[in-house]
Image (cartoon, rainbow, N blue to C red; front, side, top):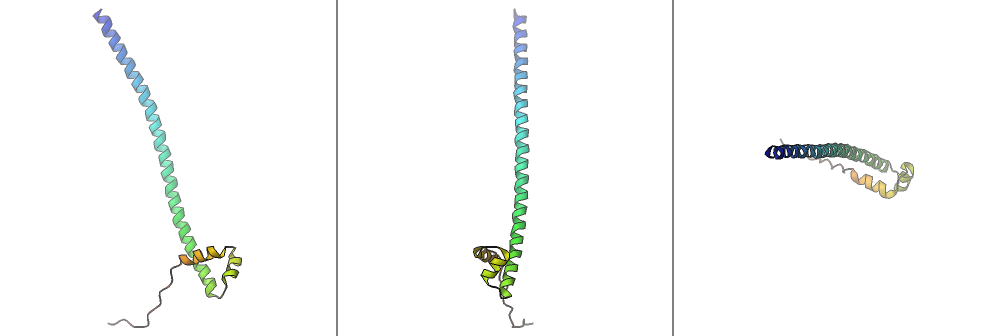
Length: 110
């Protein structure tokens, strides 16, 4: 009977090994899907960050152009009509433009 018991133990171990392999395969497939999904998320995040930076640059350009229109003597109401933006948005865009510092007329000492 000892031989029969040994055969049963080997069979049980083999079945256990197969069950573990099957579960590990399902887990590995799930992990692969998780990694692929995270990679897509991070790629989209990187693209979003690039677009946010590009948007900031464009808004600064828009603000500079709005400032130029003010310097040309246009009023806020007229500029708002011309560019189809609310006065509040004009003010926000204008605020993005750093004021140009006044140039000192004092020459540098050598």
